[in-house]
Length: 410
Figure 1 (cartoon, rainbow, N blue to C red):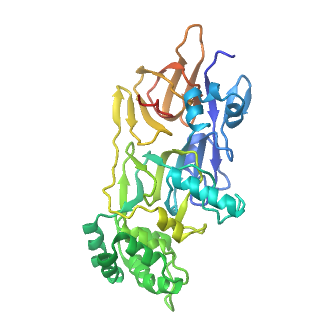
Figure 2 (cartoon, rainbow, N blue to C red):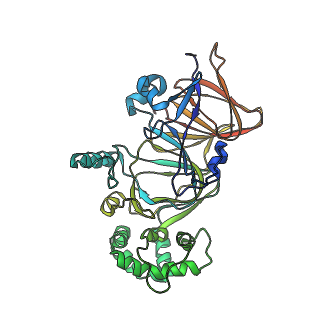
């Protein structure tokens, strides 16, 4: 058994309220008789929900295996640079909108964490902004039609939105005078009573409109499917609605990807994706959530500039492999798309996770005297030890996604 370097991996389902009830259960061949929300499927060594890998007849927690023998399970280079498996691989099914959020840079996360630790605030406190000293860049690859908010609109687009949305037109003066930061700070610091007064007519107009998914009114009406009171202002309207109008609404087709680095405000709106992120829980929220919101901290770490979203198609590096380049060393992601009897080869530079999304994938350890192989089908995954040569093939044709730590650039 000691010569085997490819193992079946089982992840952990997370039942957050915003998740769908069908996609992830079908992916994992699970029943959902109680109609629970299956929001995320985690694959990795995060201590709150570590995956297990099967060695012989036994399942072992990946984080415990790494702690006991890190060089074997993540490799010397990754151990020296990160001290852990630095990524968390996920499948997401977004039925309801996620929170407006920003992630801090590595240096700012270290400062923020150390400051909160020194204050004596428990790590479990719901008002903690920093749960660790790590940054949280992330990349998503759509596996269905997917919508998200990503960064501020370019100046001309934002001006057009403010002019064409009567309720927001008074904000044009703020934007012209104080720019992106002044505009966002103004609406984020408004007293709740003024937010309600400001946004009540906007919500009512959105509910009356026949808007498409590329328009902010569609997502505002989705927030309030049962309408609002006609006899008075709606109490506690979510100020995250401003962000729906200020940010780019991005449509991503299956197989396309979006990277989100530190400081870029964003929110997932709808659809299914695979997501790969640095192993961190640091999220600064700005609305569309009942969770803790810290406006000063959010403003401190937000990039206040208009951007043109970069939708990646993936770079084909072999006949069956597409790479999505990410400007961080914590993780890399590739799509594997094999025709029946097609084959490709690889060598792991770190601990790797391969998840089959469709069809079947055969993984053979390509080393002398090794008969180690796995035949994986939709929803199944494996963990590959660092430095392992292997070949990938398929009987009927299959698609998979691979998470890994890129080899350092010389």
